[in-house]
Image (cartoon, rainbow, N blue to C red; front, side, top):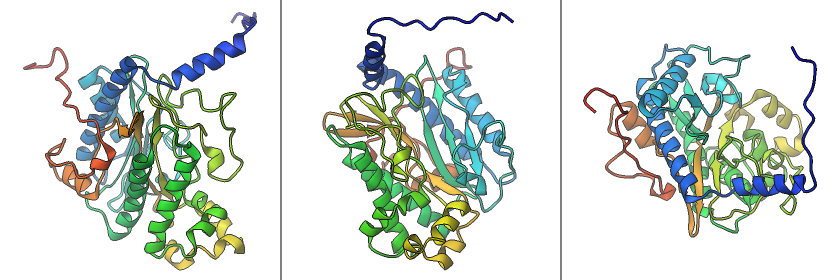
Length: 352
């Protein structure tokens, strides 16, 4: 009720200090990495618990509730890093679905793909994971086409990441990989270089490949003086950073494929872009939503490794949903260099 306003503190060098702090947050110390390994281990375990429980007929918000319960009960993480996204069916094409206007309120259908983007926060450090899987527990042929295209992009990017690599190049690599898979399935046609020149990748992935993460989910340090500016190209302009990767950075890798009517209609109405799109084949994917796979990835001296430990291959996803053990005895996706953890039981638990 006080009408007085605080005066913003300024002093000589305040802008420089801001930039120095922001750059420091872009590089993680060994202690910070240890904290983030914990948040990612806890979030990974919660995602697996939700995958095992998910069934057609449930409400989306029930999956959110299960995740929040698991991370608090089993790891003391009181808050999520951001508003959870629990999207089923067509809602998977809404990038930040789950907010107050669309509050994870749809009933899950038997033929739906689920896209769950959730992460917990612990000791002020965030995690950010997205899993996509079929509500039925088994991928249909069309669901598998889309899922494996996104997974191929995830593996290509993580395999190419290392210090000195420019992040926009990784975005383009993800687009190229997914378009190649869509072409093999007959959904798009033409020369891949020409598709990229005409920004066809942005028709299917209208967001950036990933963002710095740490004390904030979308952490600072993305566009600082002395680093590359934001692109104005479709898709690339959605990147939250255009920096060159450096050892100690933690950045999300989150390729996705979505079937958004507005974007498809716009592209199909432009002859220069429509020639790459196979209208008849794309028609059967309209209304199915989308697929995103997201892990937090630590840049190391010799490459990169995933801090998350979620099912990623089709076989892993289907096995976990059928009640199979996790972590698995055989790593079917060693390219991700996933971080495996077995969390201790919470203090005070019965039998602990």
